[in-house]
Structures are given as structure tokens and as C-alpha cells.
Length: 164
Image (tube, rainbow, N blue to C red):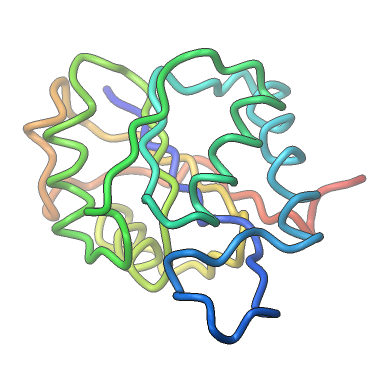
């Protein structure tokens, strides 16, 4: 049994119209919400064994703030393959980077993350910025993961629904 933590990057800043989408940083709310989700990981005993992030600045900043707030000391693998990825690309990244890790978090973007969540669990859920989904997968090895794998959505947290 593996656990996949699906995290949409925190809220980004749109105040720089000339800035490429890939280079947009977090805004004030994003900088507040990311550590809140990191604390949630700690409180729920869900510290990942590995974090894999899109190379987009807002995703990298989210991953860094979550790691710091949760006390995560492992690597944060960055890959452009998660930037605006489709579910198949998410699976490819997991197969290539997750290794023997039991609990892996991906930090990426919509609509691909909502599509991935629905493909793996059969549940259509809204993932606003900084939302975190916990999915258990009935596999022993990440390379066994396919879009036909039927996982279970264990929990879903949205920052606005959390206290504090």
C-alpha cells in the first residue's frame, strides 16, 4: 500500500503582467497558506518520504514553505514534467522518481491534479490553491501505478476550511 499526497500549489501573484506564468511567485495568501498545510502534515502524521514539485516558482515556493513548516528534511525533487501536466504525466513522474518511498507528495497544478484525483479515486473534487488530498493506493511498487488503479480518497483539506 502506497500513499500519494496531492497538493495544488498555494495562491500565486498576478501583479506582474510581463512575468511568464512559470515565474509567478506566491502572493500574501499563498505565503500564509503553504506553512498552514505544512503544519497540517505534521499534525496528521503525514510527513512525506519524498516531495516532488513542478519547477514553476509558485510550486517550488509552496514545497519549500511546506517542508520548513512540517520539519521535512528530505529532498524536494523538481521536474518540469509536472508543470501543467496531465494525469499520465503525473504517473510517469511518480514511476520515475518515487523509488521505494511509501508516502510521496506531488506539488503541481490544476486542472491536471483534479483530473488525477478523479482518475485514481473516482471522485470529482475541487482542489483550490494549497488544497491537499491524501490518497491510498493498492500497490506495492510505484511502477505498478496506472490510471486504472483504484485508490481511496482518505482525506481532503482546503486551507479556507482549516482553523487559524
